[in-house]
Image (cartoon, rainbow, N blue to C red; front, side, top):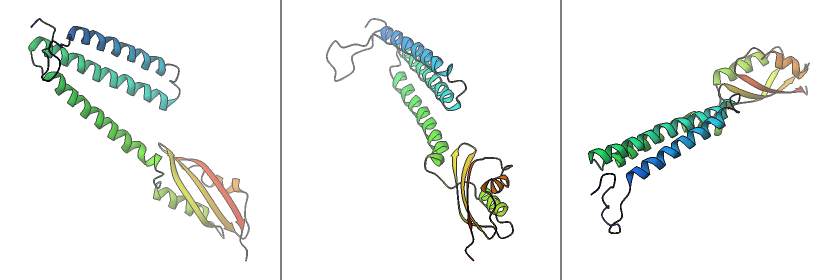
Length: 187
């Protein structure tokens, strides 16, 4: 067997061989091209955090997985350890699965409209219910990392302008979008 040619795996056509030099060269070109793509995507979107982080994730995955694959092929080619490439593939898939689980965990609450902070809800209710003002409906949900939206319905015998009620919540950190509806109490 010549150097740089992997033996034919069992069950394939006789004479079929993978030229690892060509495979390593192709992987190197793919890694460089994807890194250039990630950089080209990163630069114009540097002011948009979500797109910037997506580009950085692409660059990170390409760098990690590409260098692992190339390294495993080199180890297999020069040491004869043909199990190195599949082993590194399994390790790389475990790393990607771990990243995917972390992404689902961090973004799942936003995507599924999980109930926002109960302490913030109590604080809003306490600040709104002053005098004869009563909260009849309060919806609070997370709209992004560290940002909540609130829709508040109030009844009052002497209702104020909605802007007055919004002013009561102005200093609450993380409350980005507030909608206030005020109705006069019928009795």
